[in-house]
Length: 129
Image (cartoon, rainbow, N blue to C red; front, top):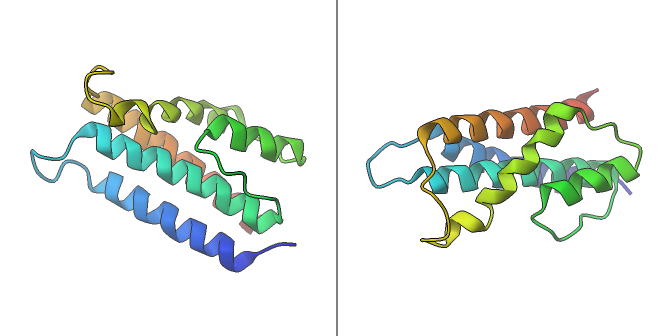
């Protein structure tokens, strides 16, 4: 059963993460790692919004690859430029543990933000037709 209200809530949360990431480094204390985490979260929540809208079970995972596979199993064609978003998974866990990664650069952040925006827009377009 489609749940438009839950889908709307997921999109609202995705937009919140996307808005925080889009605000960028508004001061020196903000880390690119944290902004990239918001990018990953925006993409994840966008995919979960689409799943809710389609009436699919929302699997409890932070893996964008798993979410995309689930959509494809349900006959949703996922474009390659959306599949590229799986690289955002690195920001979901790894960058939350200091010393286990190289610092994220501004260039990496800009790419992460672009991917997150693409996923958000694609998920919305799948609903809006």
